[in-house]
Length: 309
Image (cartoon, rainbow, N blue to C red; front, side, top):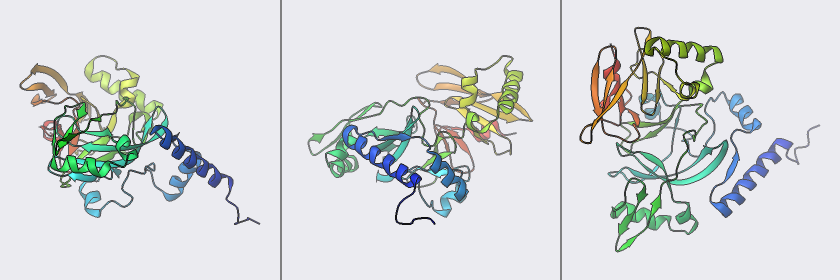
């Protein structure tokens, strides 16, 4: 007969993980635990939930968000400090080198370099978050793309951006994670489902052959596996994106957008075969956003129109 007075092994295991995470968080500011413990995988499977758990995800996203952005599997919960400047705050978990790490960070959604990793743990530990939020809300930022320097009433602080690795993620690239803009009219696709996580070896080989058929050359497996799976032109066929790479289906063939630097005024020119449509992008990160009907590169190029028949 099961003894209800004592927790089972799995419960004890989860409690130990939480305690270790809290201790590390108090001592270093970065609380790390295994990415997906076996019991967490089982819980998600039993719930029928394909989205890995993350403390930063909205537990029950508003219906209007889910209906407007069906391509999003999860939404990051952001407390907006200054909606006009698109600056907010979030507490979430990020996977760094295979370990979940707790983050307390600012989120900024500008067109060229959106970011969710302005580290404010130091100010949280010092009990100064309210002060920092006031500076961001009423003051001005005298920093740059690497260091934020909010200044207000003669005071200023420096907020540094954590240097992310290419494989850092919210959910191990097992789902599409979106960050809604303050007005909820668009979302930033902050993370996508990767080919590595969702394609079998045979499917990856087939995809590689299809891309080779168009390019006339082979592509690296590392690049192929890192591609995110989306349908950017809403034709019901899978397309693939990765930072500045856009591989789009057109009449059952895959075409890679061509990127060429022009000058400092217009930035890069993208040309999308086979129709030859072009647009210009000035951006450092090439963030992908959507309003639910179209996808945009850095909110400057309408990727859906550029790649639709």
